[in-house]
Length: 181
Image 1 (spheres, rainbow, N blue to C red):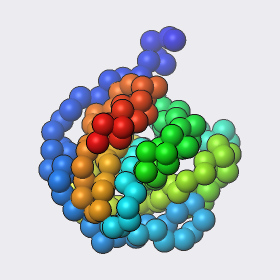
Image 2: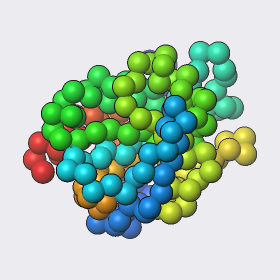
Image 3: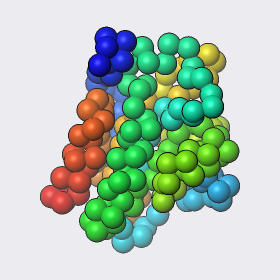
């Protein structure tokens, strides 16, 4: 891997310390099919909300200097890791949901291309970002969510993973936490 391809390690800037044990707000976001999905659920299963900046598309260039931004690279890999471990997550009474500021059409193309079998939601209007005070960064006048994962049980945030810098190993951390809790 050349130096310009290294994944820059994000630092814990303390911007998510308020999330643990907080309530998920009464918000519904559009999935890749254009259907609303409510996030404040009281189902018996746990919800894994993994937030990511954006996945690249083969037919579109990445934003300027994208690969030089700490925590920006690796969203497609992260989504594929959740996809590849979907059955393991379901077996642990959990369901993954991806959340990004990409629009519905962008998410639909990505989920079709990558054969993602779960919902990926658009927070294009920053409704959830604002309600939870999530960390972001901006490139070319567009706001992107920083990568983090929260595990929610009956509307309450039980676990927060942030910062996430080992994308390859992150799914293992999630699975291990689910097995122990």
